[in-house]
Image (cartoon, rainbow, N blue to C red; front, top):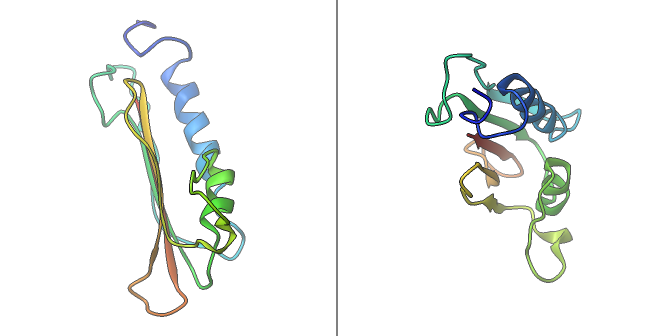
Length: 124
C-alpha cells in the first residue's frame, strides 16, 4: 500500500504537512474566505488527484510582498531584481510526478488596496 501512495509517509502525514504549510501563510490581519483541507481516505489511491489537495484564500486590506508570502509558504518567488516591491503575481511549482503547488496574489474584487492571496497544493 505504501508504494501506491507515492512512497514515504502516510496520507495522514502528507495531509498534516500540507495543512501546517498552509497555516504559516497568513498573518493575523488576514481574513480567510475559503479553505478546503485534504481528505484523508484510506481507500484513496495516488491516481485520485482529489485525495490530497488543499486550497485556501485570504483577503488582505493592504499590499503584501509576494516574496515574503512565498518564503512563508516554503517557495521562492524566483523573480529577478528587487522583489520587495512586487506584491501581485503567482509563484508555481509545476507537477513533477508527485506534487504541484501555486501561490497567487491578485487585486481583490473588493476594490483598491484589497488583495486576495490564494494557495493550492496537490500531492499524489
